[in-house]
Length: 580
Ligand SMILES: [Zn+2]
Ligand SMILES: [Zn+2]
Image (cartoon, rainbow, N blue to C red; front, side, top):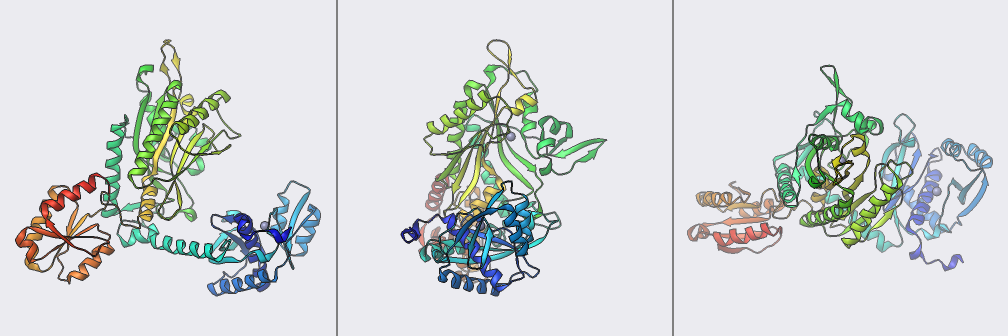
């Protein structure tokens, strides 16, 4: 049987988890004082957390990797055993593995399984590959500090990350992707292109948008607002803080407390920074009597919210403490739900496409174990989401039980240019808030009815979406989003006057233009403009000044094309309009 296993057909997760065991074995052979904790698989790889006083250094990783190769070659059989919990407890007591004993304490079943290879045994559910010889294409990547159970008050641990693939070819391709991702890291490019920073003096997770980053942000917002008006939405604006009573009614102080900033006192009343925009929009709904003829109401807001995240999990623009959601709340009648969902899906796809994303993964999350509302409501809402997806001809995956407690939802992930998926859009049906705030509309029968609420975000948050855009385009934004679209490069200072004339013409046509008047060689100025990822360079020499032309050069191209200023501007404006 074992001989028949085709190495390329092994489940990657099984292979990676087996590599984590292999790594733990090598670590304990080389550093016998090291204690084991856990070693799960993650996207594209695995890690193992070890207890050891000294952190691992890069030379250690090399040693561990070499030892792993030796053990893999030995082709040790990987054996599963089922034993009683007491026996396992005695075993790990003798092996001096206190964390394994703690894991055993948390297991309900009387029988547990262990996996052994050579002298190494780990408490594990499996499955694993049959022998260490199946593990051929792996690499240890980096280390980090971690904590037992992820809890800062518990034992400090050393984590080693690694990756493993079916064969060396796949591994090589992955490592190349990793290199490319490092070059595109939005934190690195954010600094190099002067887009944003985070200041220790302001506080972690709070983004400072520099002029160039803010330029892109305002372009995104401008487009977003225009398209919302076009698609039958109204824009609203609400404050950053509200009395705690509002959050008591919404239920946030019960189920969302851990994510909220602590309150502040104003004239004896407690106020909370808003973690969400929904209760404010509901307040606007409540200001007048609504009739069935008024619905649906679609209210959108670029709403800045504040959520507490542990400083350890903050990450550039992707995990922050203050961010602006491209939020909207739709209030509709039950008979309008499906139609509204179809419209929202169409709108989401249009917006994502405009930014250059046209491959998605779509998830429909259904009723979790703990939920509010009736089963009929859930069925109706889930059916509406499902029909919406089907009418939009979108392939989707059902995530059973992964809905939020107040309603089912659709999540959309976009695929970037490196093939990575980013969670951005979400569409959620909610029965809970309309009930908690007791909102209603007067139906055709002249009686009050409860509207259904849809929460939706297309980009998710502007911060996160911007981080995704930076990495997707490696900082070279498409023309319509580029903070500087054209840079003027006069060859000598005799062309400075002409450069100023060209600048005025372009600026008057709302083209974002800058001049580089430094006394540097033209080749040097071109290289710098390429590094700054400016889409167009206009080289201006004596000839161009005399004939009112420009020598235009695209960022990536080596060719220059000489053309009249008007012709250049026309072509440029076409490209901007077409979002090239
Ligand atoms: Zn295991
Ligand atoms: Zn909401």
